[in-house]
Image (cartoon, rainbow, N blue to C red):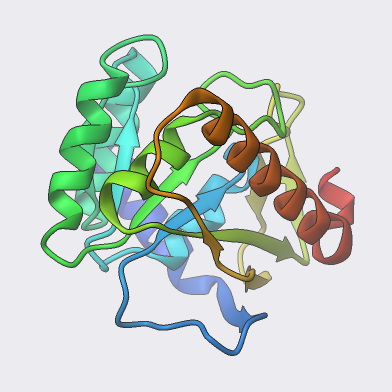
Length: 204
């Protein structure tokens, strides 16, 4: 009952936010499957921006993950359960299978426990299995509360203006060796940090 009431409040709150999508590349193809790479601390505004799109996302098997799963499903996300420490490989395979239906996916690259601004290999594996294309996504929020958690989680103020920046796509190779995956994760991290410095420097 309490979660249902909280979801209703979040739903109303989301209607007050003013989103603007900014595409930084001319070859952004809305008809091609993508894996969106996001920072955990910017998760909330991005979740609310992409609600009702059937986007695939991976949720940890923790108690906090149970709560997140409750809300995400009601926002029309397709969730699979797992993390880097519990059921991660199975979750990636299940996410890739859902993407075969033409769905996009979103991955918090430094979640669920950090460290902040790290890029774990799961996002690379998923792109290799599902579509071969990663889009780094950064948001800029005009008014917000910033928490002192490991990810500096941000909570946009009601009626805040939020710009969502979609960076240039990153193609991943088909090969699955560790050296290639580590290199691609490093490239993605550098691209995301670059976008953050330019469009969301107060989040650093």
